[in-house]
Image (tube, rainbow, N blue to C red):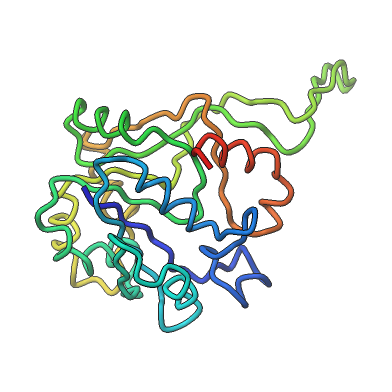
Length: 239
């Protein structure tokens, strides 16, 4: 089974840091974010190759220089045609795969990919998306009655009304067929152009990460502000 890491993008939320290094190279305990993701993916015995997609002609070249010629890592130049376009771009490398992992590099989570794969197969879905239904808020809340605060809740864990979609997927080979049908588009967005319609057909499953922590590692500032959570996730990942 192959795992695809999308490590392109402009990193606009991470500026000014991402003007000097790509989001994938954001440092965590002296190592870049993508190093943790690659090692975690490789920790699953069924993942035999990691494909990293980025703009290696620009700042993404730092990623390639970091890994060098490590075994079972393949580098593919970003197609600049959207998330779906990138998958179409590497379709040849996925042609013998019945399913594959898609991981957006700024997602940090010790998700159980083995269980997620089993769930994906059990539901016989075209795609499975990691989700969560609760999160710890970064601000304080108050219980208010008639304009009077009765109680404070400092950074509580909130149950979400809607499931939050994370950037970790398991996709079936039919997803590539769906993308090929739209290949005349200049840009193909995986979520809006492909998965939206499939969700209406009941072909997308949701794997809830439960009590596992997750963080959107969009910038060094976010990681620093959530250092305890980051360290907890890194430990859960086995590092």
